[in-house]
Amino acid sequence: MDNVEIKASKLFTLIKDGASTASEIAQQYYKKIYELQFPLVMSEIIGHLDFLEVNRKVRTEKVDGVWRYYSYE
Image (cartoon, rainbow, N blue to C red; front, top):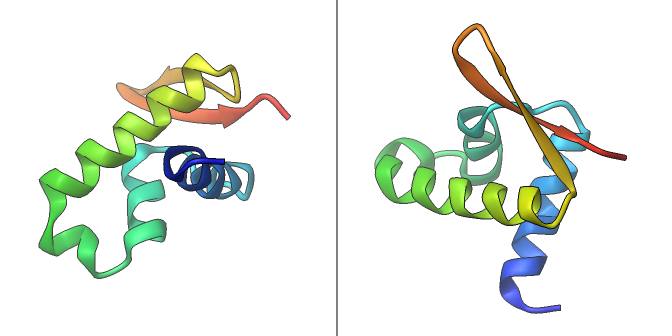
């Protein structure tokens, strides 16, 4: 497994545990760095979420104007 797959796997676990928005996932994964490096953190998280979606690990749904991520498992 390469670094992208390892991090995506960790984010996938957060999604399975109930985090569903990119912001919730980023906050849980990065903790304090979330606020300090917000644009960088969100860019990276969204890239990994796109990777998970392309690889059919997660699906998205827009709920009340907010994209939510759900596990296929």
